Length: 184
Image 1 (cartoon, rainbow, N blue to C red):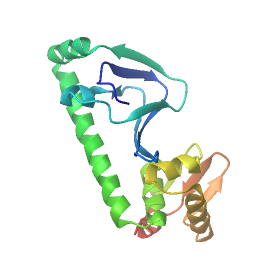
Image 2: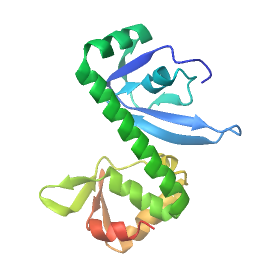
Image 3: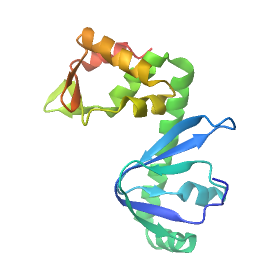
Image 4: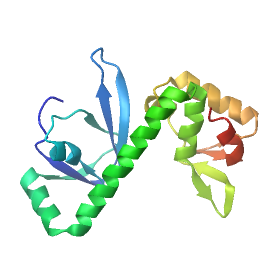
């Protein structure tokens, strides 16, 4: 988008992804926003034009704030200031990690790194984790600048090695250490 940041949004419900587009139209996934996240505040702080495009992945409910309202909220709420600072630092760290992965890892290695990020513990066994709901391979591919076919082949290979198993609605990571060895 070429318009300066004129509003900041707060997500009440739903999921939004941010994407950037190259001059040739290639789409690159940048970040995901969930309930409780603000969108647009980085452009507000640097007084820049928007560099990414936000796309609703699901039905979303948002509260739209004009810059003056956002500024008032920040000035009156030190806890909100801290929350925004931590969120910005985490997003910068995540983008830096993804950039390093894009330069240093193979495409299958990036798939494994993304699966690791998506996984949540199952019960008390730290070795077994779950990704639920079953990830959409096209979306995983967008996040790591790869193809759906590479994601599918990598997941199938990891299943044949018994590192992963696929069930209805989920992927089970049977052994996180073995998955981590494929991040290269």
